Length: 138
Image 1 (cartoon, rainbow, N blue to C red):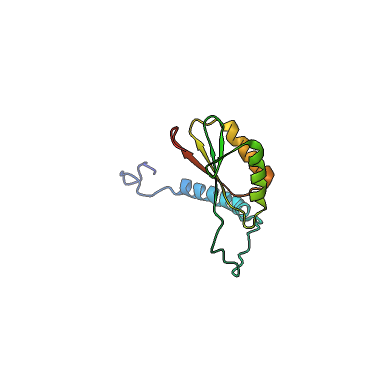
Image 2 (cartoon, rainbow, N blue to C red):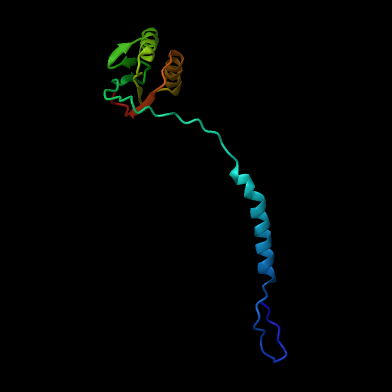
């Protein structure tokens, strides 16, 4: 705002709008340049719902427990790595495929969990869930 004195000796009462117009013109130019960039199209392939399919009885999830020492339990039954791979292949071939819920003790090594996940993926398992428990629980 200009504070020079006019011919009457008092402060000037007019507002200088030049900086406001400059800022507005700059913003207008920026928006004119960036607006076409924000309207680009992204192709998304969404799954199509089939209203005829009613899954009223989903398969029971598989509980795979991994203990701190690396022991594996398939639905509370101890399994070895070879048996685990065979059971994962059988579960992956089912239609609909059950969810594999991996439950690991808190101090379990991440390498063992990553190995089990890689085995599940190579067997063809698609649905994975994770649960954590304390050091004393299963």
